[in-house]
Image 1 (cartoon, one colour):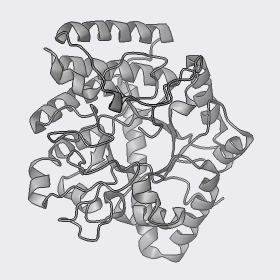
Image 2: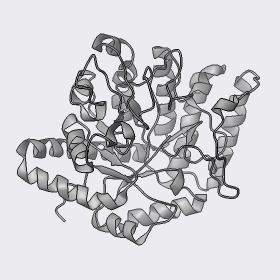
Image 3: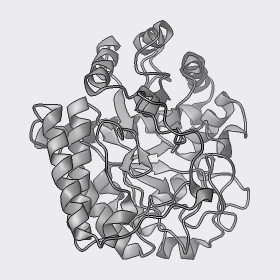
Image 4: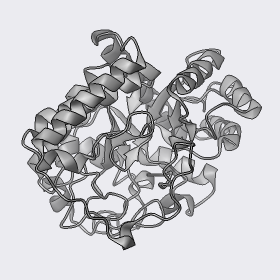
Amino acid sequence: MDPMGTDILGIGLTGTSLTDLERRILRDSTPYAVVLFGRNVGEAEELRELIKEIKSLAPGTPPLFMIDEEGGRVDRLRHLIPGLPSAEAFAEGAEPAAMSQWCGRVIGMALRWFDIEIDLAPVVDIRGEDSPKGLERRTFSSDTETVVELAAAFIRGLQGTGTAACLKHFPGIGLGSGDPHYGETVMDLSLDALDQRDLVPFARLGNEAGGIMVGHGTYPQIDPSGSPATLSRILNRDLLGRIGFQGAAISDDMEMHAVSDLGTYEEIADRALIAGNDVILFCSHIERVPDLQRHLSDKTKQDSAFAARFAEACKRADGYRAHVARLRQSAPPPAATFDDVIDEAVRFVEKLELTRPHREIVIPDIDRRQGGRVPGKGRTGREEWT
């Protein structure tokens, strides 16, 4: 296959081991990245072997591995490393920056041991009076400077282990009206308001992280077309340029309903690329990947402007890969055993709890999730997307 079209897609897998179809696609149509979800996480050695097998299949450069490992409700490793806190927990204690950095270090150690290069974290959205649906306890603070301070600490801890960060969800959805997993989320803010608040963490920390995830929020005062940021040049590449970001823009999952309902896979992939995304994630249907790659390849041959944007995306994506490599080269070696990772996690959680005041945790019935974990399967029944 023509190599054009193979370098900007991030894809998902179906389970804890590969199907024959997945092996064939990963070998013959190697994507830029593989995004891991809870459905892919079995036992520790099983996950490590899955990643090793996938990297061995690639005839050339193997895919990078990405995972949403924030702690709290978005914790793909929750049944392997229990107890990692949500971002909101740090500001509730006496040593928020130190604890945030230590949490980043623990997560980085774990991902490095599995050979996962990129953590799709931290969340640098600035919450309002209440967190919108989908962001509950995932944000550091409602104060801009606190978000910058704690996110910077998390990044230092994470990247010090050789694991790369990726800030999300650009250009900020902390005041959003809904959950983009299921539909539109609107940020009714002016550009000046966005400049003074939501863009600040991305502007201050984006180049240090090297990657920014673009969210699916809509911003009618800035782009009256109603296009989500992943599909809007105004909200995507123009705003990224406005804050001086030089790294890779990674789309949120294009199979979330806020964007998947707006066109075919090919149509939204084209729009996402033109808008400014350098890596485009389709996380649920790997069988569509070869057709998407062929479509992108064909379009680069037919449309010179599209080809130029594709070449720019590949350059930025390659720059992010080089950033990952530099982090690994300058970091200490990975932990010798997974027990070493667990030991560090236990020390961290114990110390964190000492810094926080005693509190009674009361969960209203309306907030309790239905359909609890499957006994013996290590699954919690939480929504896979988040």
